[in-house]
Length: 203
Image 1 (cartoon, helix red, strand yellow):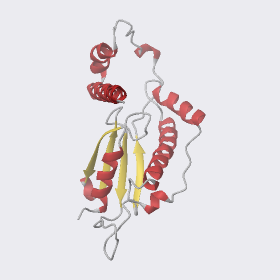
Image 2 (cartoon, rainbow, N blue to C red; image 1 turned 180 degrees about the vertical axis):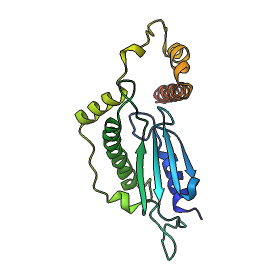
Image 3 (cartoon, helix red, strand yellow; image 1 turned 45 degrees about the vertical axis):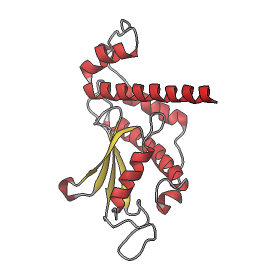
Image 4 (tube, rainbow, N blue to C red; image 1 turned 90 degrees about the vertical axis):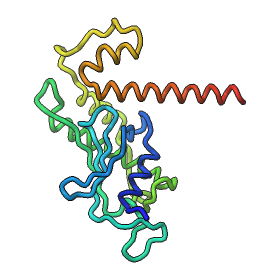
């Protein structure tokens, strides 16, 4: 019988999806560092941007519930989102990161709420949670603050003939992790397109 944390990790792995899904993550891991019980999800943009699901208690998961068990994977759980900040203008400030993370978490809660209502996450807590997505303008403004770049660090990448070349020549030098994530996302998009075309040809 899986625990509540193992069951939620399994269900989260099944709903991870590419952008624009907020849960565009490279993996779902259970961590017990420091004696804590948590699930950690690294966002595709890099390991510095991650979701953490902390659990107050770890209990056996049973759809029927019962004494000493739970049928709600999100009961006694809390989500947090962290990202790196630093001195401007090369980095977003702590205030900008906090604003972005608060808005992004609302997106995440909205997705989890929808998945729970659809039965893909075993949680009455999430299904009944009152959530609202942030306004698009607020999210866009916070995103711009997060990705603002010092003009000194802008690189002319117009020599790249295609996306593969851009990733290999420019992205990989600065962030191998991001380059790997972009290659994986590109491969996933190509496979999805092939499947769609194949399905249409068979209709």
